[in-house]
Structures are given as structure tokens and as C-alpha cells.
Image 1 (cartoon, one colour):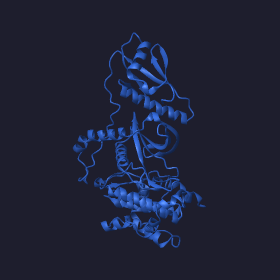
Image 2 (cartoon, helix red, strand yellow):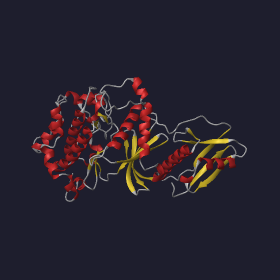
Image 3 (cartoon, helix red, strand yellow):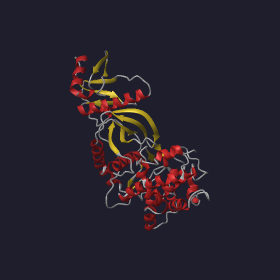
Image 4 (tube, rainbow, N blue to C red):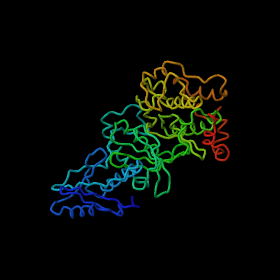
Length: 434
């Protein structure tokens, strides 16, 4: 917003007064209060209000709250421009006569429980969860303020997708001259989604792997959190339909390495699916969207979070689950990518939407799906079979699945680094006659 002036419209009982601000970032609360008092000299004005997207009045009494208002207005202007609408002035409503009560619009209250490092595979008692609220909010604030990106520096270019409690945009960071993917998530949502947001932020902040999407920063404006990550120009794998086996081998290397990295941190992904596997023109494949991830030590909690169509049978049944939940989702995802369709033909999946549990009962009751005979190599068939066996497995079985053997080992020796020179993943995907 610094590159252009904005118009602030002061709403008074006697009429409106427009004031132009050449450099919004230099505006402070006292300057704006002086301008209001010039318009309303007979009134005692100590604060003012503005309206959010649902019409609620938000009180501004400090420089910090003024900055939040300007950030919210910046986001609104960007969205209006994306829709071809001329931006409206920033309308403010002076508060006269008495000092308004305190309203903390910067504190994000998330009703969640802590993720202890060494204990607690059981649910945390309500009393402990309540005591952890301040700690959780403080941790979120630390994460949000750690980055170098704020709302005024982002120009939204196009909407990429919508779901899981938020909307993803392709955006441009004006200061860093970098294209970003920005996930904007409203905060006036369920407690479960708030927990997912907390988990996503913490995991993105901690992860450092070439097979995991890079996290740049996050900020919040009023009731919306914006999460800024790297932009993958090849999109997600679900749009490529049927993918040849030799391409899937290279993709499998990245997915297995990415998940093994997460598991080494005691983290489950919990939403593995083709739409959360991204590619770019540099031949990289990365996992994204950890909105339903959490520490492995708490993973046996009986939850129903994620995309049901890719859930392991034990999750659909509401049983305790662990690493095998991710393992199963990988197998189902790679079967779908190989076949060009969801491997359970009786389930009509609607672009990743949640499915009623009764429609997924076949996943619990029936044997795991199998690949058609004669269409795939023995190594690939073995790879799929090992990832979708029943959950009654040993720890050794998990280790064997995640280690580079068989189908994955063939492509790991070749590795993804060579794809940048001769067989880029994205080019292989887009060049297929399918």
C-alpha cells in the first residue's frame, strides 16, 4: 500500500469527510485522531471504528490496532481489484463521548491442547487443555511475527483453489520480488479447524527438507490468517490424471523421502493425497498442506480429521491409528495416479470433498484394491501392495516400507537431481498423450 495513496472517509452525523493519505505506513493513530477532531471540533473523540467483512464494528485505540485496520483494508482492496471492482475508501466511524471498552483484536484464542515432546499418547484432560491456551496463543504469535512478510507487501494475482477452511492465492511479494502461494484462512471457524491451523503453522515453521513445501511467513488481519509458502508452478498431481510408471518412480522418491522426514520428527501428515503433492518446472516434487498434521505422540487420539476418501480403514472405523494411516494414503494415492481414477470404483470422489462415512464402508469391509494384471512392473505392484496391507503390522514392516527398496530404490539411484537436466517431472507429466 506504500506505493499509492489511500482515501480515508470519516463518517460523522453531519456528513462524510474524505482525507487522502499519501503514505499509509507512516500514518499513526494520533495523526488520524487529530484529523477526526478537526472535522468534529465539538466532540471528545478518543477512538474510532471500522467495519469488517461481515459488518462488525472494530475499535481502534492505538498504533497497533491502526496497523491491523490498514492491513485488513489492504487485503480488501486486493480482492476488489482481482474481481475488477474499483476499491472503496476506508470508512471510519469516530467514537465520541466515552472511551470504548478494551477489545483485543490481535490475540488469537485457540482452544487446543499442548503437544508434549516426550509423553501423552492419550487425550489431555480438559483442565490441562484450558491451562495451555495462553501458551498456545503465545506460540502462535511468535510464529506469526517471525517472518518478514506483511499484508501491505502482498499483491494477490489469482485464486488457485478453495477448501480445508481456506482459499489459496498466487501472490506477489512486492518487497522481496517473489511469487508466493498464500493460504488465507478465516478464524471464525470451528475449534477443530483452529487446531489444524496451529498445527500447520508449527510444522511449516519447523520443517527444512527439499521434499516439503517451504514456509516463508504468516500474518493475521482481523479474523483471517495468511500463510505464505513457496509457489509450485506445476500445480498438484491430481490434475494430471493417469501418470506413467516411470514418472511415478521419480515422484515416489520425493514422497517417500518427504514422509520419512516428517516421521523422523514424530509428525504425521494425515492428509496425504494427490492434490497435496506439488511439482514445479525445476523437477521438484514436494508435499504440502499440513493443516491436519500433529505430533506422532498424540496420533492415537480418536479423530476424524482429513479427506475421508484416502483414509485408512482404521481411521474410518474410528480406531486408534499411527504411521500406517499415512502409509495407506500413499498406496491409495499412487494407485489413483497410476490408474487415472480412484481405485474404489464404487466411490465417486467429488474433487477431494469429504465423503459420508457410510459410502466409505467398502474400504473397511472389502479387501484392499489391486492393480490390473499385466499393466505394471512387478516392482511397482509390490510397492503398492506393501503400502496398502492391513494395519496389523510390525514396526519392522513400517521400516521396510519407508526404506529405499525395490521400486523406489531403482529411481532413488537415478534420483530427482538428474531430472533438472534431462527428464523434468513436469515436462514428463505434460508431454504424456493421455
